[in-house]
Image (cartoon, helix red, strand yellow):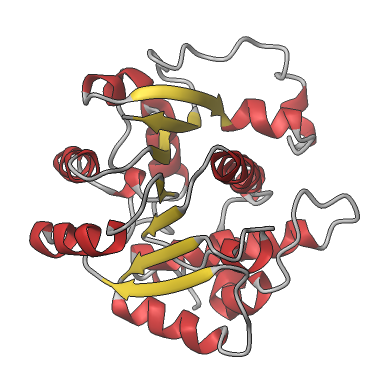
Length: 281
């Protein structure tokens, strides 16, 4: 891994990047969450990815904030009656092992075969806190995706679909197709994160070598309105900058700008901006 071009060979490798930041956060005395499995899952490649990230973005504050926002949203959904979580492109997520989940909750992870096989092997000695299943599926294959959703949602009363760290790597046609597939099934919530045009431009420029095999693609000019136009209702939404400020995770150099108003989430403009949102049918 002498050069950036060899660190992220496939978009799935970004899961190791996220896992390492979960491990770093978990080691803090004031940790927002505790993920004892993250370092194991990140491995040497996760460490290499973070080592190659430009110093100005090495903190990983947005990944930590994203993780915490989604943790909170899932637990609120369960309080509101969620009985099934489908984690699409689940990567190296460990929520079934670390969140205080009901034992009768069904949690389904979907991802490409190689990553799920590796994850299953690395976590073979661990016991999830809920009913956990893993399904290998190519979500870009419309037929395979619909078959998976039919089977994974069978019997669910109030399901939540999670697509964490996925949409920004998809083309717009793929996002529209995924939205339509989720809406065609009995799903109560869709939890997702997405980037604005300014962040897409910045990330692809600053980390061109690192992300050449996984460039940012999807960054709607109209932000939240994009999903509203697809027929979704926004339950809540928060920019990752605002969340990091709330969680006291902004880097020192960014704290001076914390007083600046955040962009309109339906017109994010050219400032580097991203958000997490919970949508309902």
